[in-house]
Length: 223
Ligand SMILES: C[S@@+](CC[C@H](N)C(=O)[O-])C[C@H]1O[C@@H](n2cnc3c(N)ncnc32)[C@H](O)[C@@H]1O
Image 1 (cartoon, rainbow, N blue to C red):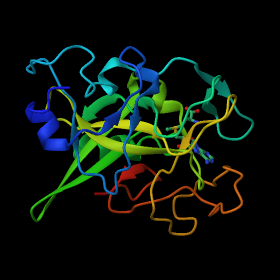
Image 2 (tube, rainbow, N blue to C red; image 1 turned 30 degrees about the vertical axis):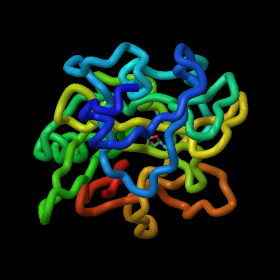
Image 3 (cartoon, rainbow, N blue to C red; image 1 turned 60 degrees about the vertical axis):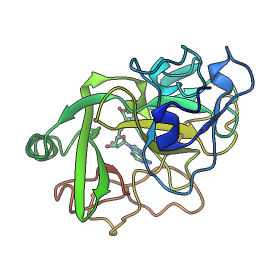
């Protein structure tokens, strides 16, 4: 890896990898916060497998979408995923706050896919809304769990627009459902959506942040 590359200097070397061709074995180093990481991009002089490129190559193989009895569709893995390994991006259309608000209001009886990323720059909070309802990838089928097995990290590749990378937070067994936590705020049943994650510590309802939408639950990532 070219350690003089400005992407690596900005984010530190945050992927650990065993073999240069096996991207599925790359693991993300322990990160204590959600500071953005920068993957190498088309402006970098390093090569295709420089060690700082992963999310840009797309989801891991062996992910399957299946119907559940109570949560609609869900994403499963047909192969074990080691802790720290990349699962997929939460890809979708980037929409404005006004458009997100409109879509939240017109979509209260269907699954919600809109994700709000909150980042802080000095005193200002900047929000990015990702909506995979019409354009996206299999990341949209990941359900919420109160005891999730993946974690989300904010990255940037070629652009100033943030990208959400979903990584295994523990070893995930073959055949398991992939889950992440839709957020930390949980105000009783205001979201109106019951949680069917089935874990021992289930809080009963999907997380709800009224500062993002006052009409329904949504997924969000705080700085
Ligand atoms: C990002 S989508 C996940 C995929 C969705 N299940 C589908 O069929 O397309 C989010 C929606 O899935 C459902 N969902 C996700 N996690 C859930 C859970 N733990 N319990 C109940 N419903 C859940 C809710 O309808 C939520 O609005």
